[in-house]
Image 1 (cartoon, rainbow, N blue to C red):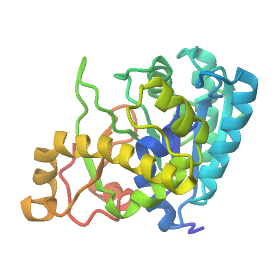
Image 2: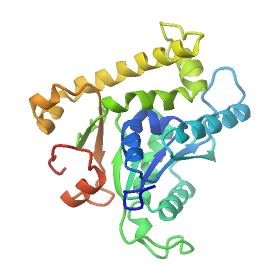
Image 3: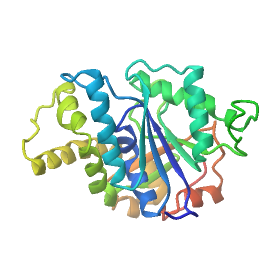
Image 4: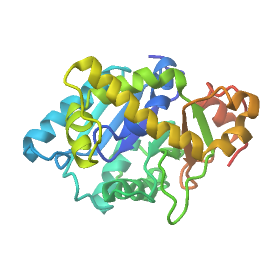
Length: 280
């Protein structure tokens, strides 16, 4: 590990949320030697069409741990039941404890504009925890933080009530292979439940190589849609010549509720961005 590298905390609602939405940024942080902690706030026990919740929760915990190991990240799965998460005071305090204990420089989470209620609950709870991590009499058993971390929202395709703002655009072409390997660790999701739930028209192959290629093709379709959606912003950030060479991207919106992202912090947290970007 590189002690001078920034510390990255990803708070997702479910096992696989961190790598599905932010696998590229996590991979780039891993290459920097950064300390990375991925947290699934729920136990993932609702995400299957055949398995029982207790067995599924254990399986998903193991899958998440295997995915984290691929980039040297610690992957922790909490015990909140999948599918019934609320932005409660208890959840807020869990998140305050996590932030104070890990001391992240950059925290990634969901926006509150999202299709899944668990995602919205985590995003709201993180928003509520911001600033409170700096208040000494809130959970006084843990050392207070001098500053909030910079908080950024992971990419999503939703537009109501407000579309995502592209404050940071990260090319991830050279991260794709690692992201797919991490996703493939979540066999219960990407090779079983999601193809069933989304009525996949192409069946999942039986052989491992075929499964990996099937997953890569499926994931790239989503990435291509994101690239098309944010084409104008990509050109504005990188210029038309550089943008034409970029196939896949991750997009982040910087939260107003965390620490402000000034030019110095931008360079520290995103040193792999070759072109300076305007502050949000």
